[in-house]
Amino acid sequence: MIDLFTWLEGSAFSTWVREAPTIWAFSTILTLHTFGMGVLVGASGLLDLRLLGIGRTMPLGPLQSLYRIMWFGFWLNLITGSMLFAADATSRGTQWLFGIKMLLVATGVVTMVMIRRQVYGTRTEPVIEGSTRTLAAISLAAWVAAITAGRLLAYVSN
Amino acid sequence: MPFMNLPHLHLLMNHVPTVGTVVALGLFILGMARRNEHLKHAALEVFFLIALATLPVYLTGVAAQLEIQGRPDVSREAITAHHDAALLSFILMMLTGFVAWLALWQFRRHGKAASWTTGGILLLGVLTLAMVAPAASIGGEIRHPEIKLDENAVAPAGVWVSAAAVQDLVTTRPWIWPAAETLHFIGLSLLFGVLFAVNVRLLGGMRGISYAAMHRMLPWGMLGFGINLITGMLFFIAAPEQYTTNAPFLWKVICLMIAGADLLYLTVFDKIWALEPGDDAAILDKAIAVTAIVAWVGVIYWGRMLPFLGNAF
Image (cartoon, rainbow over all chains, first blue to last red):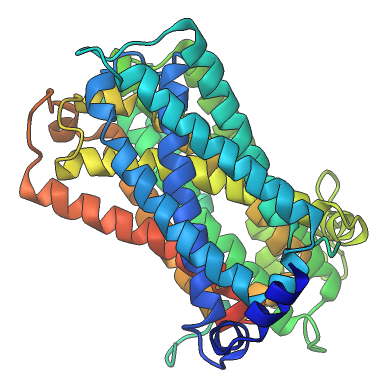
């Protein structure tokens, strides 16, 4: 595994991301990653708040289009996140906090999909079941924890 | 800026908080005395806009401090006293702006503001005026000792709030900066999520939702804004030299002013409030929505670029 990380980090692309003396490399990729975070967590968090009972006057049906916004943020961050990982593969790949962040993001995304199945699944009308609220709470907690882990990656070295 | 620097900008804008508070508080008291809801509403809007304008007044003031505090012809004590008094008034002004915004939001939803917000505005407005007037006066003495009754008197440094104490707190405890950064990113997601969705509705997405229903979520965006204002000010006060000479920071504040003005529009305007499920917003309102999204993306862009295009860490 560590050989793979070393090869990845040494590749021409990773070197460009890490070292190119242009704002279009590392800094722009990181900024897009921050923007994608705001889009994904913002849209998902808004739906979670609604499912938890805030702003009940908002009908659930049209809120389904928030999923298009969420997936846009998700793919943007999967791509930019992979680029950032490649640039620092040996340290990120062996960092426990990075592993925790990945688990938290996976929890957030899986919860997001489960909520969609439950609320907008088979029935013609969207519906909130008892467990939907639990999922929404897990989703909010997972995103907050994922942001915390991601932000602390800049300050923790092991 | 070739024709002006930040200390100059501070001199241009520094009367806005004091004069603005007098005007807003005057209108508000007049509105209460005459039982005129329109007057009260106008006063709340002025309170909100003055609070927004106070942000660049404070920021440029710190830039002016860094610029002139080493000069032999100005008193460092007077500058410190002015800064501490200004910081206290800044905090009160922001609280007033937040409560004024909440009152405007209640006005929109229920046709009138709750009595606790009305009372809160009156109390905070008076307190702000009581603090901002001496802050302005001490500021005037920095360059105009001739206005002092006793030329040798030195204004006391912050009694309740001290910028140096805040700076000391943030820089000596290594966990505060990362914790504030984390909160700043959580606040960003909350703020951006809500305001992006509301503006997308104006642009024609999620059309099945009435604007009034989306309006219900605005306080959550405001909560994110509050978290980010507090954490952002901690960074600024702890390391002002990273920001006052940082071009991206200037752009970030300009984008924030535009986005802040848009928040007032989203909260109070009649035309968008009337949008029922299925209704399409007018072309001008769509243009404003695009501008607001661009401004928020600008805030994120210039904020994230602070260390790369500027000198922040």
